[in-house]
Image (cartoon, rainbow, N blue to C red):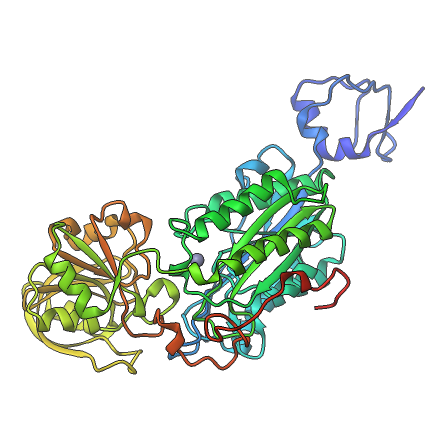
Length: 537
Ligand SMILES: [Zn+2]
């Protein structure tokens, strides 16, 4: 009698076989078969196996570790927020559905503040992520959601350091896929640790999900043996404000299109497919040796093709360096407010870009509010000034009451004093984060117990404010987010002071690379001199 070794099928599919109504050739009085040796006789393999049995499970460790560190923020970040999903009862990515890829969630960690990260706090966070990986081992792959602009004292580019330590734990053969924001400052050595490196392609960001799906698809194909990803990272000595490199305007739009074209057509002189090509703008407000633009390419089976594509794209970026300019209307504070007041549009949004909360600033500067009050502007709302004490005082005073308040500049004290004013409490927003709407003369302000960026119209609802019913709406952003450009008849980016100051030439950098454009206008760069594949970076 022919014996069939069914060990894997039994382990994975015993219950499925029974529940599917299949009849085995003999009774199984005990687990592991009649002889408890995983062997069964009298079994004829079916012509077609059920799908569940043909796709062996692959365990993918999944975690997030990300930050856009603003080293010009006045405070150090000493705490992290952690989370770890208990289980994944749904596929982590839709493209992993019914593929046999199972996400094994690890500890994810995000700094709870905007400024330079304290070294020991960052080390502890990295250890917690890495320990969760050790607990999850063995795994078949690693999938990390990163940003790329995290900077910690004594550690440097913490996300890259983490990927290096993940590589030491899992060994050289386990594929590591990472996703990034395009405002990451990416060191060249990252490519020594990560196989599949994919960043966002849109600014303002609209493709977070597509980016994850692309990285997830390459990872899936890697585990199926269809592709063999190899990456290359080429830094470019250009430090740029993100607002000058938006995919809604040139030259960045065409540069990103060129990266997309390479993903479809490859790079001349190379057979290998380009699986992913990302142009990084970098984050100018992270003062680090890695700050600046870069190109990151993942190719199939050829690091030399990845390098060639990176060199090609880096050359295009370098040639365009003098063409980058703010992709939106900009103005100094006084001029911007004047333009808004004189505008034919019924509403003009003004972004307080120096205190851009989405660039990890404190979000507590009252500069624009003071200016509007002093100019006796009517019909204006300043959305989101972080001031916990003032918010609490208003809650204690209650709606409809008046009190004297000191507003803002509780964290960021380098750009002027708080605004001292008599305010009327118009409304309390009791859900987290607690907010209060106050009136100062004819200007309304929304104070909050947390730094808050108003990025979509829905956030104004709980405040009882229809932004389109005001002449001026101020938010703490750089470029206006898509959720508001959708409704804004017009917007002007105000070039205001703060730790997110757009006039980066006036910032005091101590760690940035030199030379770098535009600081050293005569800086040179030869993409062809990019390190070859053997160079240890
Ligand atoms: Zn970004």
